[in-house]
Length: 56
Image (cartoon, rainbow, N blue to C red; front, side, top):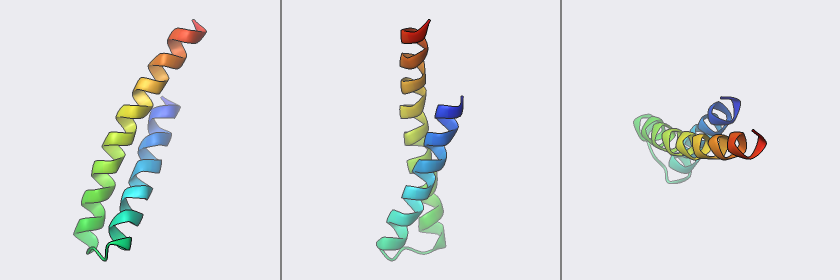
């Protein structure tokens, strides 16, 4: 669970920074943050499942 939340937060930060770098408005930054956050959370979920399968 920590991996998923950490990846979601990291994705949201990277998404907002990407939108700001492309001179986006506040709505653009929110949309990029949400999209990147969801994508990174899914990657974190897969990583978390792999880690659990390897340890147990």
